[in-house]
Length: 107
Image (tube, rainbow, N blue to C red; front, top):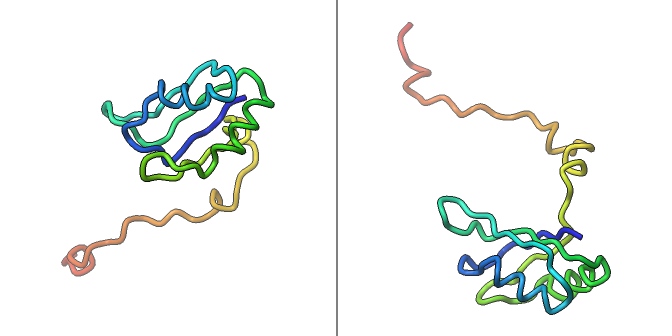
């Protein structure tokens, strides 16, 4: 089962979440998402057994790590995120507001 972990302190590594979730069962893979070599505070991991993964999610969601309470939930697959459009996808995108100078520019 794939798991999404968010609100991680920036010093937490893939090895760190592997060790933490390893207390509940075998972790097949883990990845902290980074940009320019720095953590973005969230990541993904995959556990071998779904029951153990569910227990880890239930136990660790909201748990404090350093100064943050982490968010742990099943990861959504790409099919789930693109198959059913949400109401937020239907909202009209706003363009960047014009500056006053462009409004008063002589034509």
